[in-house]
Length: 77
Length: 301
Image 1 (cartoon, rainbow over the protein chains, first blue to last red):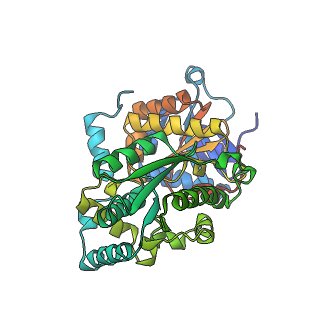
Image 2 (image 1 turned 180 degrees about the vertical axis):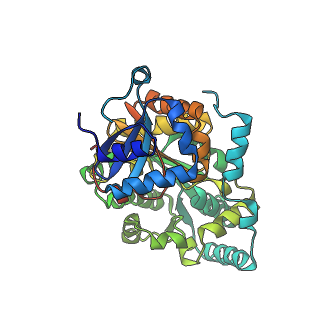
Image 3 (image 1 turned 90 degrees about the horizontal axis):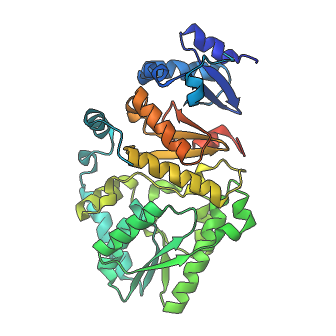
């Protein structure tokens, strides 16, 4: 599976996630709920939004993987 | 569904929820606007209002009802699949509380292929249907002037529905007399209207990207998801944007830290999935009016 360059950039920040693009929307899929905790910090959100914009996106949304995904490491990041 | 927020988290949300009472203190200029509105209404033979139960039309309905009485005023609720049941309930409750004369009619914009295709001027076709129905009611009941709740702030927005209002000779006294949204909230608060702090509430079709067909199934998905999130405890601005199998939830930016807490985020996700979306996501910027316009047309159509 192709790794989106934004996923690689997020990994450099310590955020392990899958990224898929829907036109100008970046969907960041996290492996579990605990992985959402850092995003409570507004500065983290701003950094991620800026990173997404640098990759050509206009909006960023955060998603939890399916329950089945919670039990297995994410692929494609 | 039981609200998921802890007491502490709920306090966080309440703290972050605008608008504050202080920001809506009445000024002399605002009071004068209401006096001019009363005079404007009193000068009409009779008035019929398109009444959604939102902030603007709720305020206008109470002033018109007080000024004109039941014999010269009628508020009309237009029901359709794009009008949420929760708002319908709120409109009826408010009308009963303030003794506002109300008529409910069905509108049929879903039968118009121009509307269903969801072009960027979709609101024009919806409002054309609404004002056509109200024109018929006005003629049958001998009511002379049709009005809406458009305010002065609305005039700077992209609102193709205003063209339909002009074509049907609908007056907008709040806009014409210079009422801003803040004026209306402040005056509503003084009148004891629960709508004074209510978020803006455009129709459910506004959650679909332009070019993505408006269907009853999609509107019901959106309505179920937003109702479920309200039940969880989401307050303030809320939109569930429809991107096909993916829902993108927008909430007030000040509430994001609360809803990104792992337990809350999981509950939010589950609620949206249960409402019929395969995937649920939370927008990291929070609520923005017109965010679908920024994204462009038909994502996930």
